[in-house]
Length: 341
Ligand code: NCD
Image (cartoon, rainbow, N blue to C red; front, side):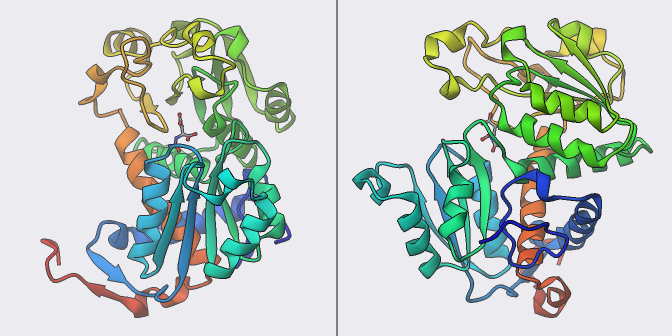
């Protein structure tokens, strides 16, 4: 498929957040709001009956894989999956190009996660079905950025604020975190954003992303101490140390758990309305614990609202890619067993 701007989403590859303009995001969020009763299983829809999603995950995944698959199922489509390299013909040396052509014959849309930056774009060049990037190494994770922005929009809305003028601190492994890379790149479509980059110096965000933020007129400040970077922001976005991207797990140990947000630090250093986000998974092992469970019952902890939004945003994306938004209502029905039906 050829990469184009998704202003008209129909049959587009979704490879990078660079493809999105503000009007696209507004449209996506509007559709997501409309589809909410389906993600909540109050309504069921069969608008994508007969369509097949190929879900190919060559790196570990829970949320992304399940929410893509569930979103497709709840719109009436079927899902076929392969997980891991060992059980795929890739282990027999098959090229990404051959693989893309074969899978295209079996499916109407393909979601793929791969460990190599750029691998999904390469796959999409040969695929004849639309391809969605579910994470390519440390490069990008565009749909996570879309659901993160949607979450920020909702959370800010509840504080009578918008994304323009947002003050956000991103904390932790900013070098390898693809969710951070995509989110920061996407902030270009908003105005007057303040970004605090909070990380050990060795784990800083790639310089090109910093330059782009500045070029779009945003304020960027860097901090190598957690408590200095998390005051005076609307959102703190934490990430785990991406152990699998380091040359060795021992090297990752130098950074794991160095920046830990817990209730005490939050209460002492953050403004009362600061929203806490994390793409998940949280690394709960003793040496990591970068976002403490002692914040679990804090109303500003948005991490599970965020993961719920993954389903809604991915469903909206499918509805737009298949150009069925206007047909959803006609193909929806209430579920007899649902308590709210
Ligand atoms: C993220 C990823 O895979 O990049 N997970 C996700 O998709 N929600 C974040 C991570 O693994 O740390």
